[in-house]
Length: 306
Picture (cartoon, rainbow, N blue to C red):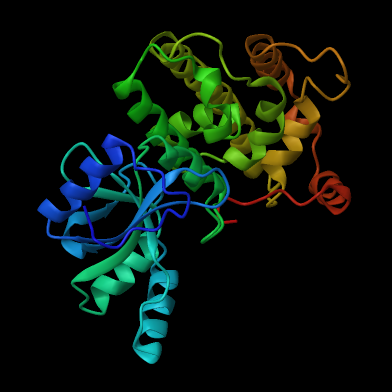
């Protein structure tokens, strides 16, 4: 244990926290403080870790090259690293940061060898931190990829836990389904479908082992609907009807939830109705001025970039 500890109430750290401090020392790091944070009084450690032993969590979004470049420039000008990252101790002998990966990469670029970190003993806290991460705003695609990565990690850790137990960490149930869709089709226009899926895709009460196949089935159902929509878009474009709002226009005209306020149908029923409506959609009656006029009065459709 380190000589310098901060816990004014005189409480002794739990055995697991003391073992984590010893692990950090064995890994070549230095624990500067073992303390209780001021909100929930949970035990944490403040340490200097070998930078070579710290990685991003394997299921978070890719780093932004622009953001890393900016942070690297700031480090160069300031000649100080002033913002500790947050890490948890992974099972593979590494330390994962769910909040601080851009800073970690910037410090690598600056040839740093060590990094100051707040080390949290509870590994599961990383999922909550990712849900609240505000270092750089997520776009829809990034968040969905991140959620699916967390889902699979939790599934591997304890498949008996129910999906709805992780509603806070995942934030939105449709992020799971869309994440699986994005894996199959990286160019999928998730933002066009999100308004529909958000209303009907709910967290499942079954355990993760049984919920995951259901998520895959929902992915396949959405992809099947999108194939029908692609055919409509191709027919419209062949007639010269081209517009950024085109996909959203067709979905708005076939949305089975338009008049549903209180009694919103379940996911399967909604997707089935949407597919039937798309199959009946008469593309020959659509004119460019119809799409352009609808776009003028519609709320902006969020892009995959923001």
